[in-house]
Length: 248
Image (cartoon, rainbow, N blue to C red):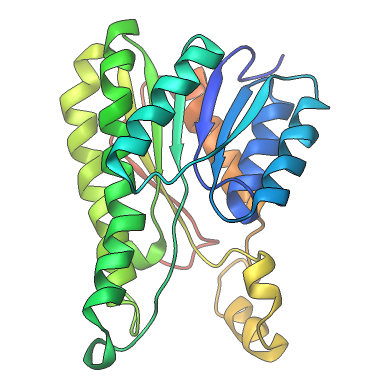
């Protein structure tokens, strides 16, 4: 039996990396997939075909979730195209790393807008239809950096920590309507971004992790399957660290 059979999911920032893995694993579990992309148009179109070939309904939307009005339009379009929305996954995010002393106001503001405000925008837009159907699972992507901080990432850590506080508040506000809201905090996940890094550096990171490996995007996707499915029907307001024991 497929764990997400017939559920309609929206995943932001799904054209590559973790978002793409979530979309593919969700499709394998029978979910219909709406997803967003911004700059990676070709990758977005390729993903739509890839998902449709798995026998589910899939549609990509070129949309910027950090734009309040665009997020409202996105949620309306998805519900119109798919009939309902059951799972919302806020995965879109960026980094603009710098030491605090060198960090510009623009680097701070951009991170807050893309990483944190986008969660507010999509969750606020989806809240009313989810409350009306009295069900739904919201999954917001944070990071271990949002739990423990990291030098050179004060802006990123603040945005990802903000997602945790926001999500816990949403869980408390919407729980009585049957809506769950949880957070996933990935650790060191090996994606296209990490492929460009020096192998020795990457290996030293792996060695410092109790499980002695970096995570795969599918490791994060599997946690998303659990939190999106009815298997987690009594789980809300939680932060699930998918980090190989990094913060244990």
